[in-house]
Amino acid sequence: MSSIFSKIIAGEIPCYKIAEDEHHFAFLDIFPVAKGHTLVVPKKETDYFFDIEDNDMSALMLFAKKVAVAIEKTISCERIGMTVLGLEVPHAHIHLVPLDERGIISFRKKMKFSKEEFEEIAEAIRGNL
Image: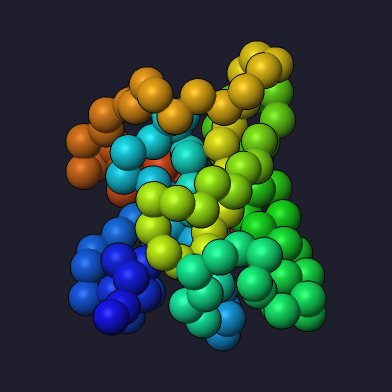
């Protein structure tokens, strides 16, 4: 059974796409903890992040770095935080979260944006890739 992320990658579920290449996909989290919160996933469905092959992991991290740089150019923040949780969706993924203060990334408080706001954020980040 395909994960929700595989369905997003296949275009079966809409998203606010940030970037894509042959092996990776990045899109805005629809339950963001910060403006610009982006998910980066390998297109190859792997449940557990640390089961990703070494070469694929390196490529995923380099792709995530490009996306993080674009987010940082777009969203006013001190830096971009990165976390891997791994239990909520059975498809390895990285959270890239703009940070304004030191400490942990809290996933308890979610932000809400309109469709238009999500589209504006995604377009602005894409413009800085």
